Length: 362
Image (cartoon, rainbow, N blue to C red; front, side, top):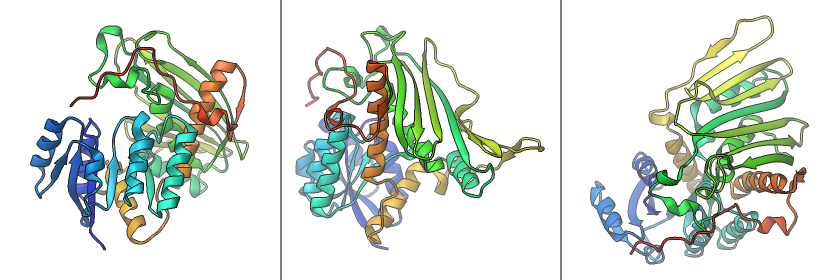
């Protein structure tokens, strides 16, 4: 299989996972890294086992002809611009979730893909986590009959004024797309869609901010979607004052002849069928070939070399953003919001606060 050269743009917390996944590709080679923090870029390049060039400007990096794939890991509100730069430079792009803060920006990325004849994948790693892959296989095998609804529940610590994390750009004006619904919710809705094949067509939601007013855009939400097959999807995420670990963070999937409990943490799948004791289904450990970041990179590499459909297409990921924006609009308007969104609503971005963005690190 053909060896591809990779260039990573943005070296935040998620960067190490992608670099590690690329290193595990027998036909993948990290050629370059770019970050506005030049010191970080040079330090990361120096850590690589093979020659790797450091850049401060991603546009300069994109001139490198040894790069076939650009891995876009910048903040969500920059995804569209950097991804379009990369595709216009003839590079295939794998971009971190969430795809973009608005549906319009997602469309811009898809249009850039098509006019340049390149591949575009959004890195929704959660759908590749072993418990959700196992749950999808059970559903496809008819283990619980026809799926009629899902219920997902999650928690995260509500950010306090004296506890703003180091990547605080997420919470500033202009840094749209980093609220709970888009930043976390897009993972959860994507996992359900991948497991069930259902597509939301109308959304009702409540988005609130009980403990983090003035610090982050929101700290909890509950969103219900009616799907094209009459199935319903409910997802809730709650912000707590103190961090704790849930015993069953994940999704309950209800069918006509049973149910599945697919837990993200811990990695467990429980199959419940009529007249039988609940059965724990074996779930592979998320190491080696079951590492979700390895799976997504391996799948994207294959789609480039074999010219097949990307594991998560731009259109696919855009549907997660439609769900998120519909949830925001529903909460604001106190009504159901239909998908696809109107042309005006496609311009709507996730919420941000009133403070200005900090200057870029030189």
